[in-house]
Length: 200
Image (cartoon, rainbow, N blue to C red; front, side, top):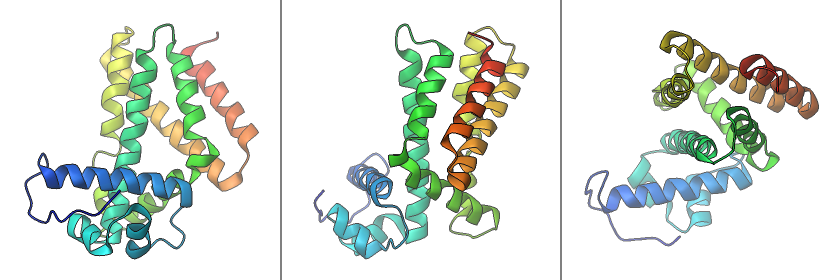
């Protein structure tokens, strides 16, 4: 990724919006590969081919950039689930298993750590992190509820099941990061799949 001289704002859909999205994507990939332990805007900028001033121009601060990385990572996960569900011959439980394997890929552990770190900061009221709470649940519930309703579940039950599923996945991801017990967490998720989707 190379630096550009664009500095005039042209709105979210213009050059600035496109460039901002490119920078977020590059930052997500960098964090997935290297984590955030000693991450600085200067170091991140050098790694993705822009100046730290350009990152400040687009994001304001390191904390605001981290919030955008979390949001983009979550969107990637929702997009993946949509693609998996659209695959011919892939059952809902198989799509869920494939997503779980992706979420628990050791190469993506840094993204999950960042999610919980920023989430914790937001819950403590840190102003720069609080925006990550916006739509943190609802952005997932909308597609999950829609999938349940399409499968014939009534809307109220669909909403409850979607929320339960989201909470279970996030809880087991936190368990995995805290304990490193991949076998135990995978077994717990398989039990959840059995209870959620039925035997088979």
